[in-house]
Length: 193
Image (cartoon, rainbow, N blue to C red; front, side, top):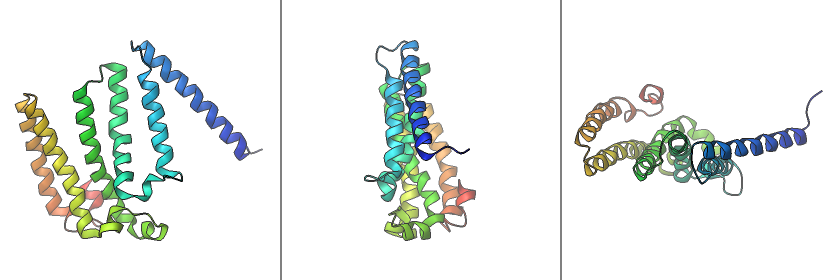
């Protein structure tokens, strides 16, 4: 006795509606006058839908699709956590937006091993669009420039020791990029991650 596709779609819609209602309650219980967690969850759901679904299908474009992944894995969850357990400040928005750009670079790492499949499916991942040589530099550039941008932001807000610590943590990252990933992104993708 299997469920029909229509039953499963209806069940999924009901589950989403209940979840969004719960997100609204959680927002108000956390002391917000505005249901911010509801809207963050709604935005995340919309982003996950348009990532794969036509007509937008963000994953067809390596830039937009990978930034959407970075935002959904880094920015939105962090914002929701801050909204629930703390205060969503401009500093948090700036830092997580920057790290969502780093997420673009991290997502490119996964694109190298699926380059043939992406070509076949017509997906313009960055390795397909620019070739492996250029894409590997875009990948590490997005990650490293983000780290240095965050360090600069921390420095500009008077957090010298945090900025120095971040630069110190970025140095081994760059060394490992040259030692492994930039030599052969397909062979060393798992080791690099």
